[in-house]
Image 1 (spheres, rainbow, N blue to C red):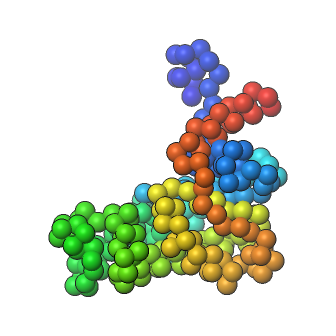
Image 2: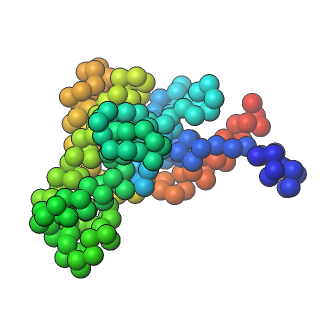
Length: 225
């Protein structure tokens, strides 16, 4: 921050990309008019931002919102952060593709093999989604497994924060209800009833613009404050 400030002689503020996206969706997207919300960007990894009483919650050291690195399965796969069983290691786009590749290499049949012309290493989340929409059972099972873990993570967040809304963005959100409906069901089953009834789980609206818009809001708020 100080380097940029010194070079360009302008006030400079830093914000996490997911926190910026949360601000963007709160002010201009799916979260307009909602005072308490959580945004998760579910893509290659998982980022998070939290809005409480209409303001971004940053925590004691600015690192609040890392829901992707909450532990869901203590015996789960190794995460990029070094921990095991993080939500990110189970639900991210990288995790979904990795799970599909593993199962096919273990001998399971899937239309994904034809979709990638036999080059299994080229399987992506998008291709898994296409296969699932075409009725492929392996792809559907992989997405359902990820959606179930996502629901567990969201249920934990619902019980802790009691938000009005959870917004899901990132590449995985393009799966729509294929991912979100099973996750919603898990939240209904696992979160406290009143909290589960109070929360909406919806896709993001702003796409890549959310972070840019949110960063502008953040800079404005810092100057005003």
